[in-house]
Image 1 (tube, each protein chain N blue to C red):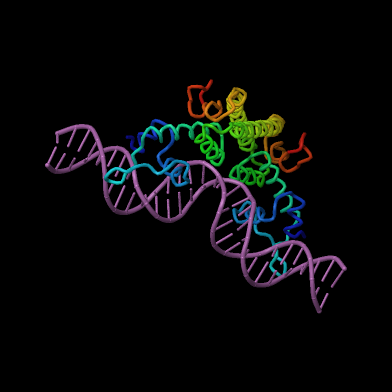
Image 2: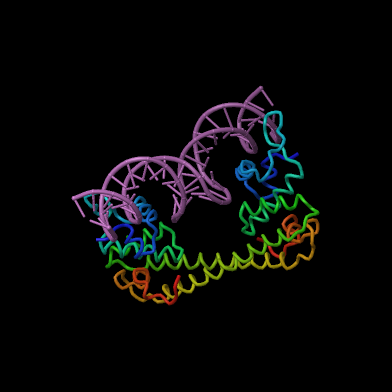
Length: 137
Length: 137
DNA sequence: TTAATATCTCTAGTCACTATAGATATTAGG
DNA sequence: CCTAATATCTATAGTGACTAGAGATATTAA
């Protein structure tokens, strides 16, 4: 059996986060020691590893909860699991595209500044005046 | 003079957000009508436009506050304004790079799934087992 | 004048944690 | 076996940048 600290070390999920996940019912409340401390088995280790991995990939708690529910039903079709992953992939791509537009705009703003005092600073000017922008954001 | 609703329409910042910005002292409390409603002048319109633009670019409230302070001192050098913009550009690029790594991993996971039930679903399997990953994240 | 719309303040909720305080358990060293 | 250091416990509040809602008051158009 693992203490919460050992589980934390093995999974890379911080101790307060593990307790938070328990509160959110993402992991079930484990057994307790005589002195009321949490004691985990390998089942919980695997489940938390799954959660950590999914969080690292940027999946939201609700999506993870859904995936965990799915994984508890091995005979069900996996279309739903695929849909969740694909939706998240699409969202990730959209976010990348948006950030790239912002990157271009920020680059234009910073590169464009050749003033030396605020009154002719292109950064400040660009923020004040949306007409100086190339694209809409 | 503009009502808060008119200011909202002109800037694209929602009414509760404007009040929130006032609370955060990002915009100063404006004059009031006889009936205690907010009345804005062009000074506030310009300031809020600046804020909106900076937020759209992803700048944090604290960074915007700093830029606003800078813009109030036209004779000061603009090195600080540039630094803020460049820092944010660097952060944006780092975020893009991270999201691209996640994209690759998500793509691999979704494309790799040819099972039809959860028990041999590659999505679920990949999340359970970090060894199946190409890169570290 | 009246009905519809806008605004007011205040509080609480969102997401996914993180931080803190004060109390109790466990463990390693002597 | 005792003690000191470390780990864990619960509970509450804070983070950032808003958003939602309730119930009261103002303004505006017909």
